[in-house]
Image (cartoon, rainbow, N blue to C red; front, side):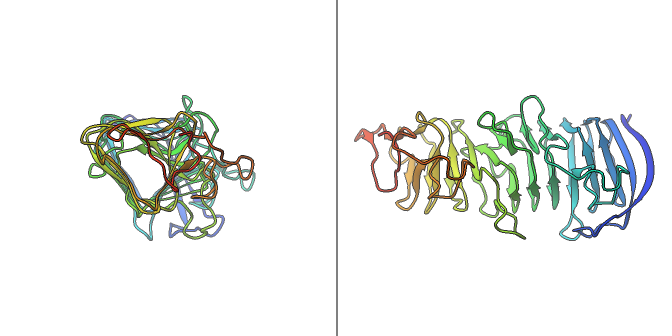
Length: 356
């Protein structure tokens, strides 16, 4: 039985020019409850979650061009999966119920409301397999839920199987809380293998911290951290935030648009290898944070890469989002320690503001 509850059906006209190719009018279908049998959301409809969460336990297929609008609601994928495959011309959109650009005035209040960050919670993928988001936009999410503010939050065993390709994640609410709880896309330790968790050609802008992933995840260089239509619009805490869970794996940090950010003292053992590539910037958030190499060449630092303080705006920009309020000083982070002969802290012109 499908537990999805359809509340109502009506028609709405667009109230302004749509930024993408969508229908001039959409049927409004209000939903809540759960989906426990294969279900398809059809183009020409706008699906509305107004104050009610939706639990997905089966396969939900979302057709190209569909709009989903939410208010104070969350989508939980638990044992099921979402197949949301749009196109460049007909993107799938998850946005605020107050966003009249898509399928018009779905909440029927004229111009009384406008979309805002945190209007809805987000999409939580809990142990899902083979979920696909392609040419999907996720706007105005991040309402606090259990201390977290995310557009997407991934949980499950290493590594959760999904595909995100050509998605735009923007206008996510950011709150200055713990290190990882307010990232637009929270992959964490569940996003550690790029062959399983596929993440390509995605765009982040107008968020706080855009992305939180396992330190051993090889992030594809096709992902961007600014609005392609307005390159000056980036994210306030623009960086790739790393969860350091030890894996017997080789990773290359190669993104040069933003810094990689670490908030802990990270020791690399055995066959694990981290290659820090040309012109890459790695920033450390606190005085106890740093890197430790425990075998020959299991941390390889390119001579043009920079290890520096989280407060260092001169390299990879204002990652901590405070403008000119703070400045880097010696001791902002611990340093890069070589525990293999010859033992000692690695020194160099590209290692800045470390204690050692």
